[in-house]
Amino acid sequence: VPVARPLHLAAGNLRILADAPPLLYISQHRCRSGYGEAARLQLCALVSAGQRVRAQAAGAKMDLPGPLAEFARSLEGGAGAAPKAVVLHLTAKAFKPFLQLKDMTPVIGLAVWETTRIPDEWVHNLNQCTRLWVPSEYQKAAYERSGVVRPIDVVPFAIPPHVFPHEDLTGGLKARQRPGGVLGNELGSIGDNTRVFLSIFQWQHRKNPEGL
Image (cartoon, rainbow, N blue to C red; front, side, top):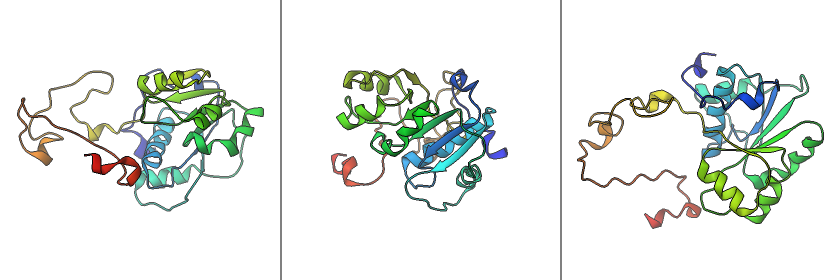
């Protein structure tokens, strides 16, 4: 799968799937959103790692352009073999219609949240899953602080290395970021004493752009 070759997951994060092909991945991979982009990258990385995956689109079903979107759509298909595990890569509020699947197969919930506590409705739905994936230790702590009791695995999101050419994705920096690199091309030379604020979000009221 050529488009998947530059994508990686952190070492060891696929161990819990070793005995579970094929995997049914239910996500918003057809949506133009952060959830959609993350799902497309995860699908490519899973296939690149040798995992058999069948994709099922939830939410808006847009025919987005680009190789990642086309590859994700290519993983959609008929029922095929019964899945040995299901990943729900959605907001936890959207889990409910799919939680009945846990009566037939393990269900892994994957959702993200920005603050230190999550809504009670999310806690209830997350606790209905077999286990959970989160992209960071911060997210895991927020879940546990809010009352989530299911087993939680920290599974960092897939990253296309060409976006961060100065990063060693196996851990640590290859070289200190220099002017002319990823940031330098856009912002020019940045001095060591310059404060740089980075904000990445979907431009909408809920994300409070006015707060910047």
